[in-house]
Length: 375
Image: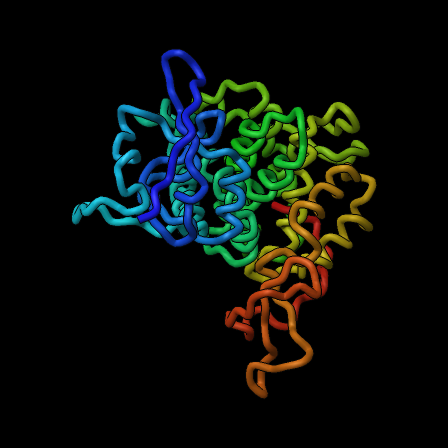
């Protein structure tokens, strides 16, 4: 049996990390140890499987370590490539969709938890746990996370909207420097906590907003800040991003009508992610807009309100045809009654045929003018 060696480096006198030999990481094989990056963040837990070459490449790029020696002596065994027999240990497949679904259900419970309960003091920690999970999903399987935006099923619209904006925000911020990424993701997951009932109500109706509804809509960033303070949130960046998530570059936003450099960069990201998501998501009264059409609308109709730098970052992060986009292949048909479908990011690189309910998604809808601004 071929044996692998480990190069050991001392990061601090009191702590030792061992770099994993690349040969020990294989697609489809359960991990024998927890995998960390150079900043000591957990990347993948023991027993999980690396599910694709892309995920393997991202792990290698991050620089992978495990802690040694006390809890990793088994990694130095004579046969370092074989799992030790253990009937009580079951290797788990890693599914980005399942992780994000679990996050959605947990977020649903957190957003709807009363502000004054015995669990209130755990709200911040639990939201930050979700933040880290969303970040990891986007970091190691960004394509699957993007597909979740279009194909995922959350418990209710309000939860899916928060999750989708957080995913888009994470992917955009990963391409930017000097940003408070975790505060921004926490804001994306909680930005509408002050208007959950109204948001769910608006999901079901295409009627113009009433006067009271419009007033509540314009006040909801401040109401969300208040609700978050009641739940123990004290991070100024988190609260400020929530307060600004409907402001516009040209000063046409709300609630304060600020513009330009007064708006945090993280808030500008969320503004754009929210508007994009609001168009591509299905509503009870209309199907979602095709992603390429949504990007055209953002660049044309909303150009003065949005930061062009952020729009460029969004397009680089997700592509014109992100994973999960439904496209028709003109050369073949699945049957005589329905087109062939595929998952695509940038045409014509169509890599995977995917048989999803075409009668529900085809044809892609034209853009429908709306004043919902992504909510």
